[in-house]
Image (cartoon, rainbow, N blue to C red; front, side, top):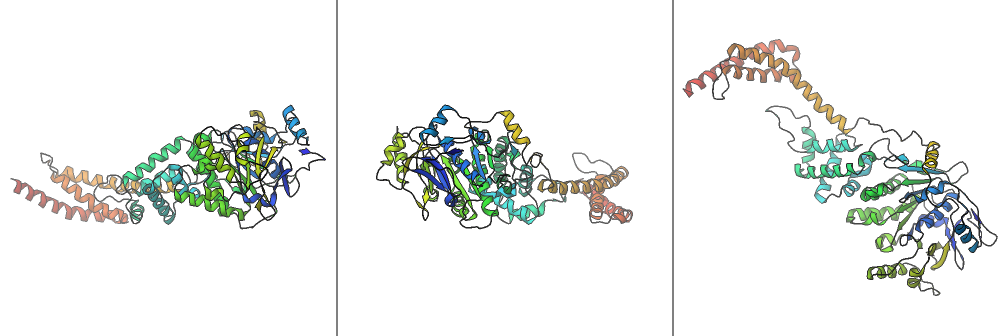
Length: 534
């Protein structure tokens, strides 16, 4: 913690972020009005994020943050009184005191944190289409698949459930002998009722699923699914728990990363009740590398993002986007972000100059500052800030030096991470995957039951056909059926109808009648056919 007689530290109402001519405060009551942290690589965005996360946690607000480079994990360990940290504190009129925060590590791949899982149903067709990079036609077929699953009670939990369902809605899947029953016919018919579901389109979706599987999507979809209330916890001292998503490997699959975080926001939006404006947020969500969320996003997805960002404030959740440049965020989302921290930008190219000008225009002007010029002059650890104040209006932009964090700056060691995970309240809750009965198992049972019925009746009928062919069989050359084969085929059809129809108890009687009638008809057809051919 940082304390001083000159500059008061965090209060129950405010977080001290840094100091310029005046201390820069982030008011907790406006913490759910969202925010933006921007700046070029190496200018101090992660430190600013850590300072705000520490302040929210001290105030009893749980925090969720994506850790792209691994540097944020050090928030779980006490800070070290290194020379540059102590010097910055002294320059700000502060006294440095180490502190640490209750931390839980999460990892989609389950390697450096507790596994994070969601079901296919929870993800939904819109976000899943974004994750798979589907076009409008393919997204339409995916919507059909979800509708058929809902109507037929097929739970979509993991990837094999979705694959099995897509196979089931393909029209005329597989070659069947004449008269064979298709156990999935009702599902195929239901799918075709919503439009033309073609084999080619389903095949394309299946190939995209394979790409997602190769990126680790198989581990993400499944059970036990994450309960978002596990993010919203305080420790025994009343401080907010800081949840760190280990995202260094996840960033190798940027679409999976962005869609996963958007899913989390959407789930929070759907699950949490309306609470209005509280004295402090219920949860603060830091979205690093936020430009990945908006890159090539279709209009339907952009509408969803805007809706979530605009309305989740009333659920008591604050969302803070962290990215290199303000122009990475669309205007209709940028307008919802009231708290701003701008680190240095470089203006070496026309595009850079445009970005600097755009960043300057997002701040409330300060007559004492040339905002556009200052943005290019900021040193490491300096920032331009504008936080909401008064009635929720932005303060004029101020140039500040960001205070040093109280916890460690930099990553934890493997041993420290293991110790934290071993002491986690969620140890064992998510670590082992559960494969419950769902769409895949249900569809497999239907296919297996039909196959078993066919084998059962086929065994009986095969014996009768063999006997009939032995008694009456004289092979006709050049590929034509023998009389015995004709008899066997007709006996088979007749007996199969009886057995499948639930008449197995009368099998002896049915067989006798079938032989009497079918053999006679087969002999007549066989004899006449032979005479006519001759």
